Every structure is written in structure tokens, then in C-alpha cells.
Image 1 (cartoon, rainbow, N blue to C red):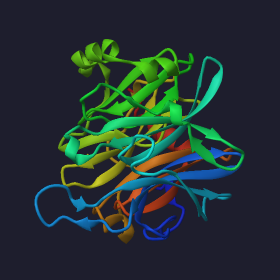
Image 2 (image 1 turned 135 degrees about the vertical axis):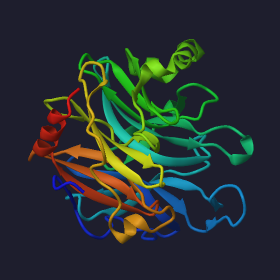
Image 3 (image 1 turned 30 degrees about the vertical axis):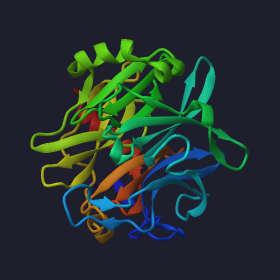
Image 4 (image 1 turned 30 degrees about the horizontal axis):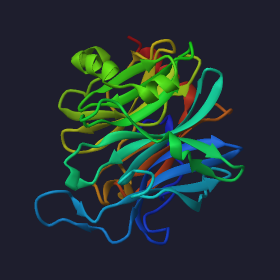
Length: 328
């Protein structure tokens, strides 16, 4: 791990089994709001088990979105279940990201997630999205806003939504094995894009690719929503190597287009601690949440071994210096 990055603790920020009725708790999005850290984690209901035959890795595997809160980003308390599998038209929630975007002068808090369908349906996973409302104490799913983003019938996930400099809405997503970007004038255009938009997009999918896996790697996917810096948009993302290890990489995106302007080779973080290497999925660090503080540091949350949540601090100045050396 590069010296510009330091783990908040050598122990998980949130460990598996710390909430009654749940086993693994991991892959957590983050939203810093009202002077508090609100962490949105994927919590797997207790009772799942490894599959000893062909098929999925686990059986009876259903996950909800659990919300934890913290005043300092070090100690989190479980608060409530935001989205439960089988509700809101979602069979299973996975890997939530929470982000704020402005469209037509209105701020929207958006949660994107992997919408995992009932395995019996034969349908692929899709990008699910809800707008969130806040009642002064808790966030809630806006029931009427739930939708699937991206082309129908295509496996698609790892979505983050953000503003370009001119106010347009960008969606970074992953049609395996690359990351692509789609751009819309308004959030409503994103929400209601249909085959008239997505069929030509898919026909020219290579034109929309912004990051491809490294040689001998299996795939890449967006991690946390991009962090705004003076030099560009900082995109922390994951890459799965050919040996199955999930690592964290970083790219600098252009404010105006969302396209890559700097992409250093290699990872900036890899699984090292025991709880990052051993769990439901071995050797995984999976970044999903980011908050830029006023002290020149970036706070990141990540999933570890598909079992726990960890947190780290990135020195922004040193990171930008590294990215400057890698500008394309």
C-alpha cells in the first residue's frame, strides 16, 4: 500500500455479525450529511450457507441496505434498515452507493445499487436506483422514484452518478469487463432513458469505454462516486486481477467530459490484513464510499473479503502529485 494511504484502524470499522440477524456486512457506500457520516452497507441476512455443489457460491443469500451513523468516521452505530430484500420491488439489494447531484437547480440524493433478481427469473443483474429523502433524522427511499438504469436484458452494475462541470449528469457503469460512461442533460433523462437511447449506445459500446482492465486482469468497476478536486474528478475503483484478488486503483477524470486524463499503472491498495484476505470471498478490498474533508484528506470506506467494512484516509496532495506524473 502506498504511503499516501493509511487505514483508519487495523480492525474492521464494522465487523461481520455485529448486527442481530445479519452475518456479513460489507461494500458500504457513504454520504456525509448534516455533520455526520451516514454509511450504507450491504448486510447479508443470517442463515446463508456455502453451496457444496455447482451453482452460486452461497445459498439462501439475501442482502439488505443497513444504515450506520458516526460523528467522527471511527465509531459507527447501527441505526436502521433502509431497504429490505423483497421490498420496494427489489428481490435483493447489493453494493449501495449514495451521491448528491444537482439537476435543473434542484439537489437530489441518489442511491444506486445492484438490483439482483430472483435467480429463478433467469434475468441478469441490473442497476437499481432510488432517490432518497431525509426527515431530519433518517433517510428514506422515495418509493415512487425506484427504477432500473441502463439497457434492458444486459448485465450491468457498479454505477455511480455525478455532475459534470456544465451541470450535465454522468453515469459510470460496468458492462463487463470495462467501465463505460453515459451522459444526460438532466436526471430525469437518465431516469427515463429507454431503448431509443440505449440501443445505439450498446451498438457503439466501445466508444463509451473510459477504463479497461490491465493486461491479465479480469475486470474493473467504479468504486466511490468521483471526488471533486481542483485538478479533476478523483475516481477510486476496483480491479480484479487474474489471480482473483480485488485491488483499489485511482484515475483522474476531466471535469467537462468525465473522460480519463490520468491513470497510473498498478494498484494503490491491496488486501493485506487478515480480515481483508479471509472471509466469504478471499482477498478483496472493494472501495465504495468517499468524503473529501477540509483538511486536505479523503476518507474512503471499503468492503473487505465480502465480510466486513474498513475505512482509510488518503493524502489528497500526494495523490494529486502522483496523478500529475501520470497525466495522458
